[in-house]
Image 1 (cartoon, helix red, strand yellow):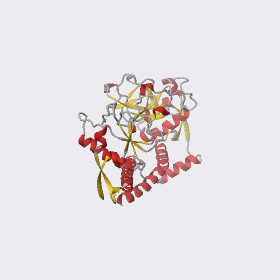
Image 2 (cartoon, rainbow, N blue to C red):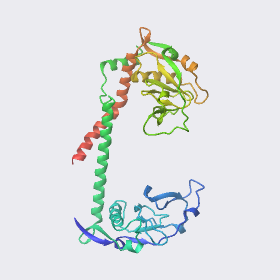
Image 3 (cartoon, rainbow, N blue to C red):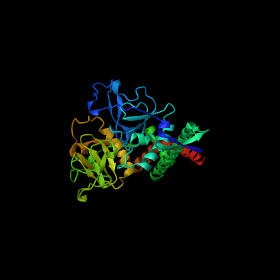
Image 4 (tube, one colour):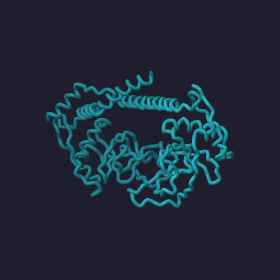
Length: 379
């Protein structure tokens, strides 16, 4: 590849700046109004700091030419934030344009400009417009002219490679998760097939039980106010009445004396939302701890209990009342039985069968993508 040195002003036309005071922009009164991005001294979100309704008298780049934004002030001093590519340029401070500029080759050109800014200037040594215009950038050439075609193909190749790498990483993470969770194999065992067939054909024996006969319904050891706790990425789970993320709002670090037992079901009194909690946890307001009286209770059959309990409470209207210990304990649920007792083994087999059926499409998708990604990355 041949390279050539070019002044920035020979590659891009520097357009006159229109001063725009963001405080004087008309606020939106209707979502249907025409709005434009306002570009300011930002290093994220492609330089956009807000969206406003602007009149055409203050639009930079009114015709929407391909543009690179460079921040500057009234004294023509260039700020050293990252240049950005604009599709329209409305509200921008200083814009550099070229008819040959597009969303692909602009990445190459912006990279060349950034190298100049970071090499020659600093926070205490800012460039003027004239200095930056006369700065030299290094670009690929063909027959003595700037090779825009090469820049586009180079950026496109980098993007394709990056996408392949990201996809490979995500597929690897998915594969690791499936293996760790025991869901990699989606083939049903004979026992799982039989349980599903018996369920479909009504051959399972069922019986109604009061929840209170199978579980102890306990109050939390201490209520931790959601407005006062400090949520962090480490600590013990903090369970509240949300229906998301297994009821866990985050993690908190509090006195572990007030941890509720793991291997239990958390029950939101106002929402009737239930989740299996494997680890000890803290709670917010109106959470009951549903603790099994049987040592056979575990993470697998807990999913069956939660499903049948959720069905039993399905007539409950959210927010109409709050379930107390007595009401929860007297609620009846249906369970498969053996010798007139809950059949924990059947429940576990049923859940593993359902998990495999649910995960089958994901596993097949992962297998296809893994094979495709390997072929792409190896080329």
